Amino acid sequence: MSCDFLARAVPGVQKLSPYVPGKPVDELARELGLAVEDIVKLASNENPLGPSAAVIAAVQAALPEITRYPDGNGFALKQALAQTFGVAPSQLTLGNGSNDVLELIARAFLAPGLNAVFSQHAFAVYPLVTQAVGAEGRSVPALDWGHDLPGMLEACDANTRVVFIANPNNPTGTWFDHAALERFMQQISEHVLVVLDEAYTEYSDAGELPNGLDYLAQYPNLVVTRTFSKAYGLAALRIGYAASSVDVADVLNRVRQPFNANSLALAAAVAALTDVDYLERSRALNRAGMQQLETGFSELGLSWITSRGNFIAVDLQQPAAPIYQALLAEGVIVRPVAAYEMPTFLRVSIGLPAENQRLLAALRKVLSA
Ligand SMILES: *Cc1c(COP(=O)(O)O)cnc(C)c1O
Image 1: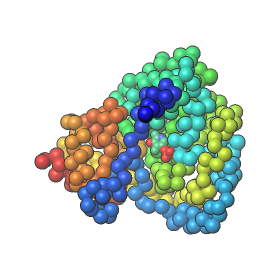
Image 2 (image 1 turned 90 degrees about the horizontal axis):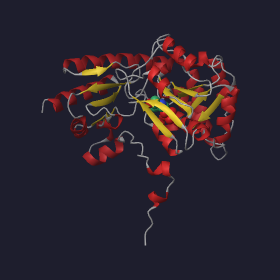
Image 3 (image 1 turned 180 degrees about the vertical axis):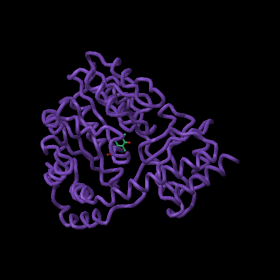
Image 4 (image 1 turned 60 degrees about the vertical axis):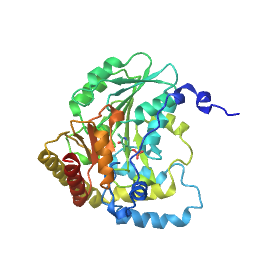
């Protein structure tokens, strides 16, 4: 006799579709019988530079201590973040990646009968964490692929507890400016938590996007989330954080698992914060790679959505799934985004110049086949 455990799961979980990550390099290498070195992965917005030497040294120095639990309060990293960004350690909540922080927010503030508002084409984790706790997710139609902030305001009602906003957004790369954020914060009820996800903020030029941290003092309902997974190059270690009012941080730290941020990640993040040169090289590489891909796409007659992230959504003007498969056969992994209601697009992460070139050559071959 078997039991239908999906039917026994709580209602919000029954309706979940699992997050689909980028295809791992090892998996494709096995399938194609190729060496791992022959595969190019531009599918998960990872940093193509490899880890900074300072990070490797910090992780090595922390290794002998892995028999001990990590510092559950993340004292050293909070101090370093506080010094770097001018916030108080008591405003910070550390997470096992910033995805962990997004989930903490949902667990602390959402429940059946309540709702969260986000945009069409927005990061898939927002609906995921919302539904997992049985709350309603309200997807607001996008405007020119970007967030329609006034529309999102209108979608809020008395049961709205959280609004998730990504600036820039993944997978579209779209962004909004200071004035748009200020208008939004001034109009939204102070009882609604506004989660401003700044996972890619390091890639834009200074002043182009609002810095959410600048608004924390003015808006106690603002929560800014950031990550070490992208520009800082620590995706595998899983470390991110939220900066908020002290009151919100207190709530989030109550639902947090005591040791959600591991000791290697904590040590690596402190080192990454101080390695200003690595961050600058990441930004420069990204800028040049973005230009390289835009030029290549335009030579192929393709259009794209202008992006302020480390990725770009390119429009193939035909179903993207077969092209994605054909690129895999060429040893190039990108990200299909049909689940984001973008069935003719592929999202391409910015790689090293040679990786970008491999993608462009494979795309040319596949599109002319
Ligand atoms: C990559 C990404 C994150 C960060 O995820 P981590 O859990 O920190 O690795 C958060 N938000 C968006 C929009 C992202 O694309």
